[in-house]
Amino acid sequence: MSLPLLPTLDELLHPETQPTDVRARSRASADPLDPIHLFDMHWRDPEGRVSHLALPRELTGTRATVVVLSGRHFPTGSHKVGPAYSCLRERLVAGEITQDGSTLVFPSTGNYGIGGAWVGPRAGFRSLVVLPQDMSEERFEKIRAYGADIIATPGSESNVKEIYDKVGELRKDPNNRILNQFEDFGNYRFHHHVTGGAACILAEELVAAGHGERVSAFVSAMGSAGTLAAADRMRRDWPGMKTVAVEPIQCPTLYNVGYGAHAIEGIGDKHVTWIHNVRATDLLVCVDDNACLEGLQLLQEGRDTLQAELGLDPAFLASMDGVFGISGVCNVLASIATARHYGMGEGELIFTVATDGFDRYPSVLRRLDATKGPMDAGRARERLELFLGISPTRTLEATMEVRRRWHNQKYFTWVEQQNRSLADLEELWEPETWLAEAARVAELDRRTLELRTPA
Image (cartoon, rainbow, N blue to C red):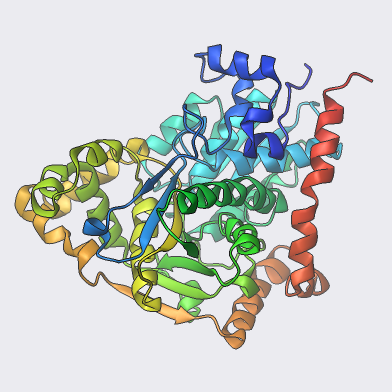
């Protein structure tokens, strides 16, 4: 079997530069499993615009504008398919992985695993996803639908150690090739170049149209921390922009070297990931997981109340349908907390991300119905305060001392457990390391294009 055409990251940032025949084939194919849709792993909607929602101030209660990039137009309905592809692509162009019967192993708490389940078979490989058994039913259904196998490990989204233990066993088989989003710089490079680049394009368009004056913050919860790489790219265009990391109150790993379990699927994994550029992080916001669940139920099922109580435009409410998952609501609540923390005002833009959409959470809301009761007008009015009031949050300014502590926390996972060297860890403290990793995109893109040319 030969490899399908592989896109460069620059073609995913600028899909209009893709070969004409490729664009025509991707538009013509209605088969979601067609490998041509590898070229659709970008942030553009069907009209070619960077997919986003600018939230009205009536909903956020802030003078600054929260801008949410939406990942639901990616082939799997989540932008995490991009990092899964990027990690595989880099191994392919380096010749480290070939179509020799290898199995690609994707450690994940959900969306990255779904992405790997889709990407692997599209490139001619078997995919095996390792994820916690307590993730939503829809996650398991999607992984199987894309043709991947599953190993379910004990626990929930905060039990990554159990995933690593299983991956350690699988690594002993030379046919298993591990693509670990938590340490693989292919993840960082995708978000730095594609997500960060798309955000910069959108920011320029919004400012030019008079919808803001400057980008003041980029906010993202941490699963792998890959999405935060977009902030590293944005800071080049918007000096002084704040990078804000987010984790659950119930699992305060960076906040207080803590532990626990929580219900925000895909984030807060009780360790500091290898690819988290902690030295470039300015603020940590902790968000209550119950607020995220109840906030999702309000946005998805309480839109009549949003219109009646806040006067929100019905067209906007319709455009919001299905856009948010749990972590997307988490990011919005953290963005509101960021605006209040810094006293951000008129003309300031806060960028964040809705990693996935509602399609993988109906079962989660049905569990919420059973414990809290179904959505009605009374509950909807009460939950408006999650956005307009002071929802449960905690903040921690990232002084250099705090950043160094976060960096040192990497030791326990990566040096003690995952056999990384102390010298490699110390390299991560240096800003030059991150600049060099980001700069590798051009060479990797060149080698990707060479794969399209027969020898």
